[in-house]
Structure formats: C-alpha cells, structure tokens
Length: 73
Image 1 (spheres, rainbow, N blue to C red):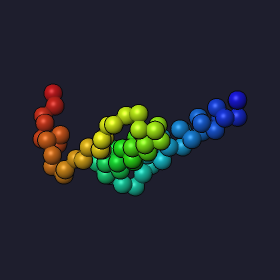
Image 2: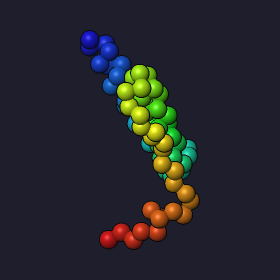
Image 3: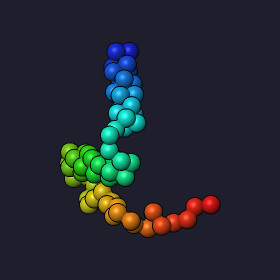
C-alpha cells in the first residue's frame, strides 16, 4: 500500500511541476487541461454503464473573451 501511495504522490508532484515549467502560455495550458478533463469525464461516465446521461463538454474560452475584460479591484 505504501508503494502505491508513493507512486500516486510522485505522479501528482510531477504533473504540478510539468504545468509550472510548461513552455506554453497560461491560457493555452488552461484550455488544454480543460479539454483533457472533459474527455476524461466523458470516458468515466461512459464506463459507468450509462448511469449518468450528462452531455458534459468542456468550456471553450475565446481569445479576448469576457474574462480578460473584467476589471478586478
């Protein structure tokens, strides 16, 4: 059990470091992560035997969307 826990923690730490040192911009990285999480969610829901009928699609952000125009205090 300790080995599996170590592998899991190592994978999480590696993923975090990979995102911190990614050569891509933050917006592109967030878009890619959102797309991959949407795909994973779709795969998990299809593996569950159709228990959920959610048609979850990842949100797409447009360049210059409203999130970039909001003034923050």
